Image (spheres, rainbow, N blue to C red):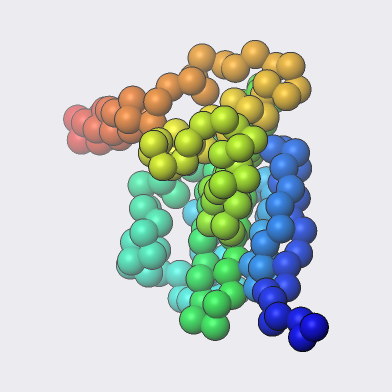
Length: 182
Ligand SMILES: [Zn+2]
């Protein structure tokens, strides 16, 4: 029998989610670890792809400056190249106490897993449906899963729906602005 031309796959492992899957060899997950500046790590990351990381370039790529300046949590950067190569890159602040850190890292891992085509496998693991949730809420449920499997209680702030978090963040930003304007 003539073997079919098949897409070569490789294993990828997400250590905080304790989840592994097979992705095409053209897909790579990069966990860059802790950073003290989301902004600096983002600019550095873009430079490695030959992109001049100006504020305008960041905005054009859908990376809001406000998120970078705020320097909260973590970041996932999806890179899709015309030759089909896909890189899913994450980095994140170190959060205290450790349940918040686990939640944060698992959240970013989930973004990368979805981007690299492992959304279905992750759905099975989490028992929550990707399509029925905002991606941020799906990734939050991954964060809670990472706590559950370690027998750690979910901190209340890790149970806040994305819509609510947005309102809080927007409120904090406008508060900051009004304070600096006064
Ligand atoms: Zn997210």
